[in-house]
Length: 118
Ligand SMILES: [Zn+2]
Image (cartoon, rainbow, N blue to C red; front, side, top):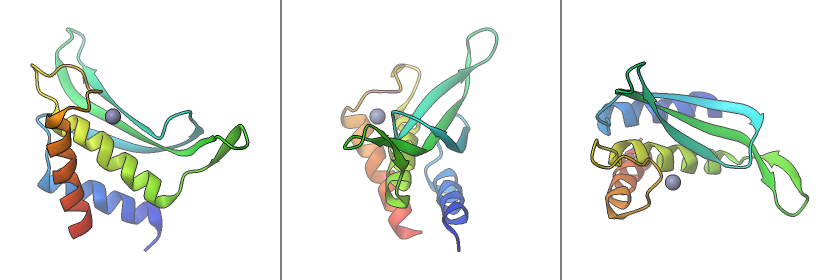
């Protein structure tokens, strides 16, 4: 199985076992980025939350060389778990998607369990 197929299997497993309160759209992004991944809240025209968008980047900063390098497969899976955990930890009273608090930590542990069991 190639990595992209495996990656999407992980996404399917997370979707099934660790479903956040809103649907999550995940994409692997080829263009270079200064970050490994991000999660964003998607809102409708009235500003109501309707889902999440998770992006995992395949070209990340190469700090030693000041350019970009390919993200390793493990880094991409780590980014997926991390960003999915943000979506899982989110609720309407927990508006920011960027907190790394205890709620996030528990969500991350759940994602980790799903990924290592797959
Ligand atoms: Zn984070």
